[in-house]
Amino acid sequence: MRSVQRAEYVGEDDSQMSAPVSGIQPSLLRWARTSANMPVSVVAAKLRRPVAEIESWENGESAPSYPQLEKLAYELYKRPLATFFLPAPPSEPDVKAEFRSLPDEDLETLSRDTLFLIRKARAYQLALRELFGERTPADRPIWRTIQLSTSQPVARQANQIRNALGVSIDQQRAWQDDDTALKQWRRAIEARGVFVFKHTFKQREISGFCLSQAEFPVIMINNSTTKTRQVFSLLHELAHVLFMRDGISTFDETRIEGLPVQDKTIERFCNAIAAEVLVPMADFRAQIRGLDGNLENAGEDQFAALAKRYHVSRAVVLRRMLDEKRVSASFYQIKSSEWDAQKKAEGSGGNYHATQNAYLSERFLQEVFARYARRQISRDEVADFIDIKPRNVERLQDLVLRGAAA
Image 1: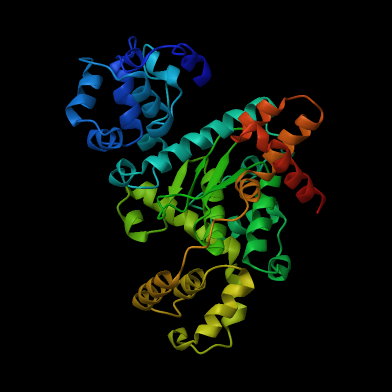
Image 2 (image 1 turned 180 degrees about the vertical axis):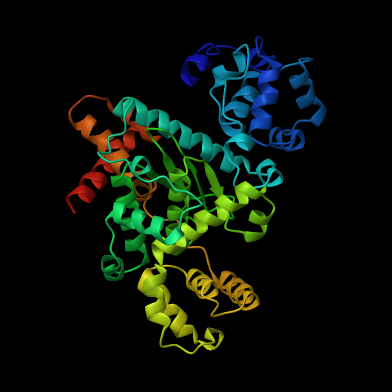
């Protein structure tokens, strides 16, 4: 679409390129800006134009030039250029209505980057529908066999999830490290029909989100957080999927407290489910039985050993101790804050293709490249599905094939 629109201006002189573009709908300019949570002042600063000029475009008193429209479309709002010539804004889910796991004031301040990632996740759902048709490829979709209820015991429902995923405590303990744990939980969840993507969120306090759907639910987790936090995010968002409810998570308990009663109950329940799946209380009690009654005197090595057993953070272990009333709420707050301050973001650099391979759903990638190998889709279509340049397709394909053979 971009190349077609651009072609209209080939051969034009500078004065024509700087002339206002006709046919733009002012309401579309305003909609694109507000849907990206961008104040007029920010747009003006990025374009190096007066605020009054941006406002005049949105009021229909004037219009941007073609280069300005390109920058608005591709750099600031991440929208196809043709969008701005539509008669009305396209229909999109309202973030406030879609996500009830954060207070309205937090949803209103979601960063432009986070909103773009939500839009990207919706695009993945469309791509999945195009690849697989109208039905999930999973033989036994987990959301059709397990529906969570806050009125039922957490332990029983968490055990159902663990059994459905086919992960035993012994298998979990045998995993080499936290990275392996993340990969194995992710693979088990994808095997039951939920597609898991990753990305480095610029809004670092967001741990992840999910888009539940009857056939193609998607989870996206923040790759800039620690592996153990990603694991917890993954299970928390899976709980949202099993409620058939979209969710976006920060794990900041003060934000949960600001929710309406029903939404607060569900958020707490999703946290409890994730904790019980990862650290089953029956097993945990057996591990701490021989420790001193007041676990506030436990050494750092004891917290670390328990965290290593389950491949979770020390904070999750401490929370389980709080649940068992083996530490006080004040000790939990102080210690978890101390550990949180010690955390350093894991580097997200490295090989570009390896990063893309890790970011994209494994099952999604395998299906795309299987169809490419059978010549059912072209290289350009592959690039469009997974949002990379066509020249990078073969190198990423090699990584996917090597991973599948491992």
